[in-house]
Length: 175
Image 1 (cartoon, rainbow, N blue to C red):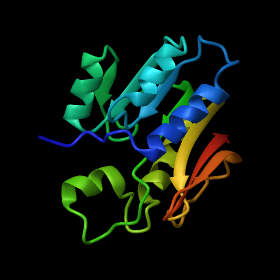
Image 2: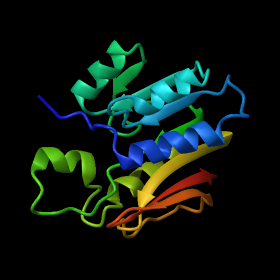
Image 3: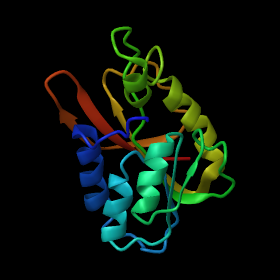
Image 4: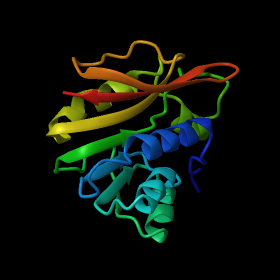
């Protein structure tokens, strides 16, 4: 049985951004969350009145948990099984640099590759073809993540939070 990423500081920061940033937006926008984990962001968006929600994960346990909560979530490695475009793409990725001391199962949820940015960089390339013309991405990263290639996205820092060992940042990206 796999671990489902439990909400933590990063999850709650992203949740706060969604609640504060999306209040005045149209409830009809099409939203996808990449890497749903426990489903905390989908639950937050549903409580806010958003209806056109979907998600993907590559962890079957996370998919099953989100389906039990009533969400449309499918297996996909980033956008590998996604064909449509979205007005908003949300991603709280594994963003920490690989740590040899961490067990393999835990590293799946926390490590974004050698520098922490490899998965994020792949996401940023793939996301362009799944974003509507005026669409946005909300992406959480850490100051410990090295080597992010922002792919010429227009970036706006929405919030940052200092923790004892890192600083979390939530970015809004547009093509």
